[in-house]
Each structure stands twice: as C-alpha cells, then as structure tokens.
Amino acid sequence: MGCLAGGGHRVVGVDVSTDKVAMLNRGASPIVEAEIGELIAEAARDGRLTATDDVAQAIAETDISLVAVGTPSAPDGSLDYRSIDAVTGQIAAAIKTKSGPHTVVMRSTVPPGTAVDRVIPALKAGSGRTLGDGLHYYSNPEFLRESTAVRDFHKPPFTLIGAPEGDDAAILRELYSAIPSPVHVVPYQVAEGVKYLSNAYHAIKIAFANEAGGVLAAYGVDAPVAFKLFCEDRDLNISSAYLRPGFAFGGSCLPKDVRGFLSLASQKGIPTPFMSSVLPSNVSVIDRAHREILSRGRQPVALFGLAFKPGTDDLRESPFVILAERLLGKGFPLKIYDRSVNVANLMGSNRAYIKQEIPHLEELMVDTPEAALAGAKLAVIGHVNRADRTAMIAALDGHAVFDLAGIAALRNHPGIDYRGFCW
Ligand SMILES: NC(=O)c1ccc[n+]([C@@H]2O[C@H](COP(=O)([O-])OP(=O)(O)OC[C@H]3O[C@@H](n4cnc5c(N)ncnc54)[C@H](O)[C@@H]3O)[C@@H](O)[C@H]2O)c1
Image 1 (cartoon, rainbow, N blue to C red):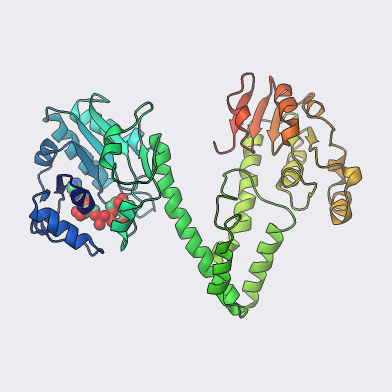
Image 2: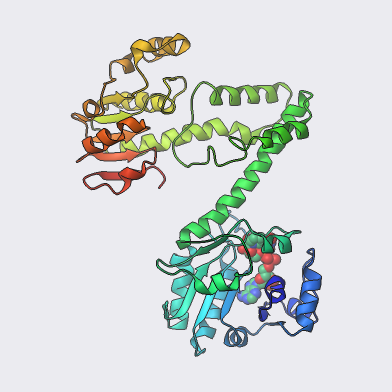
C-alpha cells in the first residue's frame, strides 16, 4: 500500500480492524518495517493514501482491489479460508452495485486451485458478472520479506501473474510498470503453486543449512566458511541443477554420501530429522511410480533406461534397477533397453554388481528400442539417449507410455497414450 502510494497511485486501504484504519488515516504505519513509516506518512499527507472499513465505498472509488488478508493454518495444517471467503463475498457484493469494471487481485498466499475452484466462482455468483466482462481476476502472489519489504517491492526477482488464457494482464503490467523486473503471466494454478514452492524451498534450505552446519561443526569444521565455499559453486549447488521434478536419484555417490553424512551425525549425537528423510523420500518416489504401473494391471513392459542416469553404465543404486526388480517381482514380463549399458563391457565394481546382484536383468536387456517394444503394451521411459529418441518415438506408436523423464516430444505425440510422472 505504502509503496503503491509512494509510486503515485491513489490507494484506499480497507481493513476490518478499525485501529489499523485509524492509524493509516493519521499517516501512521500499523506495522514495523524499514522505510514504510515515511512512505505512509507522506502519502497520507498528500492525500494519496486513505483507509476505511467500508468495502463498497472503496470499490466504488477504485479500479483494482488487491487482497492481502491473512491465510493462517487451520488446526490440521490446511489453509484457513475464512478471511479469503469473507473478503471475496464483500468485494463481490460491492462490485454488484458498481457501474464500471473492477479487477480483483489475490496477493495472499493461497493453494493452487483457489482461483478457479473457490474465489472466481464466489466473485461471479456474488457480483452477477462473468469473468472478462466487468469482472477481472488475477493471482499475483507476493514475495516480499518482512524487514526488507520496501526494497523487495522495488526489486522483486520477477512479477508473477496468474491469468486466464489469452489475457496478458495489461492492467497489472501498468500498475507495476515502474518495477524493472520481468513479468511472467501464467495460468492461475502455476502462479499459486510457485508461491508455495518458494516458501517450502526457503524453509528446506534453512533446515539443511542448520542440520549440516551442526554436523560439520561437531567435526571441527568452520561451518560458515564451508557454506561460503559451497555457495560459490553456481553450477551445481546454487543453481537450477537438480531442481527438475521427476524420478528418483541413485548412483554410486549421492545415496552413499547421504548415508555417510547421517552416520557422522549420529556418531556425534547430532539430530538430523530433515536429512534423515532424504533417502526415504527418494524411495517414496520409486513407490509412487511403481504404484502407478501396478494400477494399470499386469502387462508386458518395455523399460527405457537402467543406469541411474543417461550416458553412464553405472547401475549401482540405480532407481531403475529397483523399479525393474519390483516389476519382475510382481510378474510383469519385462524388456530393458539402455544404450550405455552393455553388460559385456562393464568393468570393475559395476560389473561385479550386475553379475552378483542382478544377473537376471542381464537376460532381459535388448539392443534396440524396437526390440524392447516388440510385444510390450506399456513403455516406461526412465531415460533415453538423444541418439535413440527418434527411433523410440516412432516405435512407440500405439503404446501406452509412462514418462518418468519428461521428454517434451512425447507429450502431445499423436498415437501415444501418454501419462507424465508429475507434469
Ligand atoms: N507477511 C509477509 O511478509 C508476507 C509475504 C508474502 C506473502 N504474505 C501473505 O500475505 C497474506 C497476508 O499476510 P500478513 O502477514 O499481512 O497477514 P496479517 O494477518 O498480518 O494481515 C491481514 C490483514 O487483513 C485484515 N483482514 C482480515 N479480513 C479482512 C476483511 N474481510 N476485509 C478487510 N481486511 C481484512 C486483518 O485485519 C489484517 O489486518 C498472507 O496470505 C500471507 O501468507 C505475507
């Protein structure tokens, strides 16, 4: 409110708290926040900022309503929608009596689906208007941090706007035109989801840093120094690497070293509930894929990819080996294709692993995508080398596909009964 008024907009603050309304009308900030006191005092003095508890009056005088009511947790952890529902009902009733168009913008943090399933239907029913015709609705989650909110307002990472298809949210682009950050207009659910994703990830980063820092310190490591170096790696550590939703991790390093780190922690009595959940979480991802395949009934399966990732023949702790074992255990006829895994050429501990642990998988391996698909009903795509994609996609015609890899070319391919893992 203070930042928008400071940017020259005429702002009417609406709150059910008469104390907050009175403070704002006196030019006093109801919150403790750097720079906001001066912004509000100046805007109130210049007449650009007033406050009221009269929703109808505020709606009549303005073009846009920004909703920023509280969305606390209900006792079961779900979201308490009471303030959202109340304010939606009040805004809808006020729009009904207004002659011109009105735009409602959700800035509160709300779960994906709230716009489509809850707020828009309530606004339409209460105002008697249809979306796009005198009533406009956008999701616009805010990413401001308390204590640096004014700075964050002027320099957000991006402006995220959830909008109906084909609507480029011109009114919000204009509202934020002084802010230099990129504007992304996306479907409502994506905008709502990114807000949750962001805060969950921030919390996860803190939990990781605190637990890992405690373990390092117990071994005499200066944890802040270690973390400073860790953060210097912008390729793998502080980057989008490993942040692509999909299937489980594996290989000879990540599972082993997570276990090793947890063992170090337990030897020093350092609790690590967060990091202890990483390997079970990884197994739960395999479980989810397994359940999905079982739910389609027993049928011949072609599995593409056996090594833990494409371009390697490392089968140790590969989640695809685990998935293959489970399918065999449930009696699924199975063929496996992985261009990089030629058992005859395997070396060292990797060779020993396949000979001792999974010799029966060797017999199921075939040399071409076509051979894997011959007789198969369902293709499970773990990963596919680029060199095999064209042949595989051509051979997939008429098959059901369960894609764990997120191969864009498969998604809307005609002739394929496609199902993605989390897309
Ligand atoms: N606090 C932050 O820094 C921050 C950052 C990003 C997102 N968010 C999200 O923004 C939302 C608001 O957070 P907050 O910390 O400001 O909450 P808050 O509870 O401090 O403030 C919400 C205000 O809404 C008012 N209100 C409730 N019902 C109303 C109604 N029907 N009409 C008018 N006013 C009403 C309350 O009186 C209160 O003053 C939440 O969804 C939160 O998750 C907050």
